[in-house]
Amino acid sequence: MTAEPASLAPVAISLALTAAFLWAVVSIMMRRRGKRPVADAPEREPYRVYSREYDRVLTAADLPVALYDASSDREEGYVEVDDRPWRAQITRAENIYRGLDEPSPLAGSEAGEFHDAAVLLMVDQSGSMRGEPMAWVAAGTRRLSEELGRRGASVAAAGYTTAGWNGGFARSKWLRAGRPRRPGRLCALLHILYQPFDGSAPDDNAWRQMLNPDILRENVDGESLQWGAGYLKERPERRRILLVVSDGAPVDDATLLANGASYLHRHFLTVRDALLDAKEPELLAIGAGYRVSEFYPVSREATDAAALVRAGLELVRGAMRSR
Image 1 (cartoon, one colour):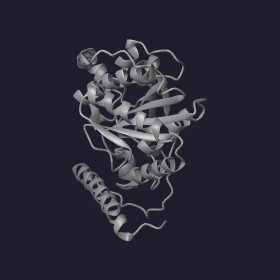
Image 2 (cartoon, rainbow, N blue to C red):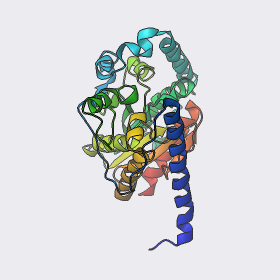
Image 3 (cartoon, rainbow, N blue to C red):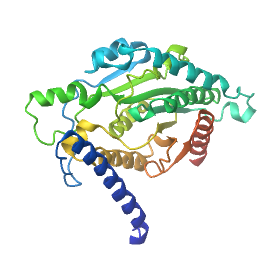
Image 4 (cartoon, rainbow, N blue to C red):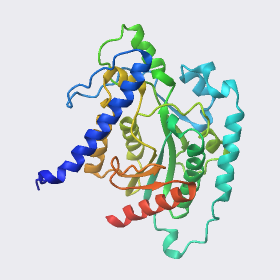
């Protein structure tokens, strides 16, 4: 069925406002650096990746040693300077986790309500999550993973960010090559697996690593959705669900400055729409103190750990009952 033009107007306005906002942010940032922003290319410009050489997938046990080698920040990292903020963040998150209501006994129908479902919790670990947001998101994600598991689901938890500020080693490679025009994604991706699909519960250290301040860099949501979908693809469960916890749109300074303000956002929309059309995996989202309904049609907003747990259970329950 062809949509009426009037029904498309709100979507077009929303996309236009988002693009305008991203362009304004990049323009301000560029003026501060004394550089001219690169104009956006035509909407059909293909998405490119300048280099995958420095992309990393790490487990919680790999951190923080592997992070030091993966990041161009190295000794400029927060933990290298002073690890007291990290220890304070761990204490804050553990207090939030312990303050959540103790799990109540499950009714018979609840015990197996998510049987034959694989749920991947994907947490946005961009710099805007620094401080209190990351503390309650980590605590809430931990409890949500436990609650989903109690109800019969296979559960994994991962974070997505970049390995280093300002493009990391990938941008350095581009600079050495003479800065070719419109290089495509110009940063090193970092995906961190805190809880794998192996049936074992993560130890306390895995959740503490989620709070490492040197992880919180930038976010390339389109490719992270692809990574999450790929990780779920081989699961034997009948229902595969990708549940994203995010506080906004994709941003990587190095990529946007070299390709245009809407470059990552357009790719995100392309990937998102493909997943929504395929319904494999099923795509859900929780906005961390931010309404993400313009990015994810099936979503809830949460402003604390308890609300995150409730939102996650409601979303997965709704998905399981919808088909």
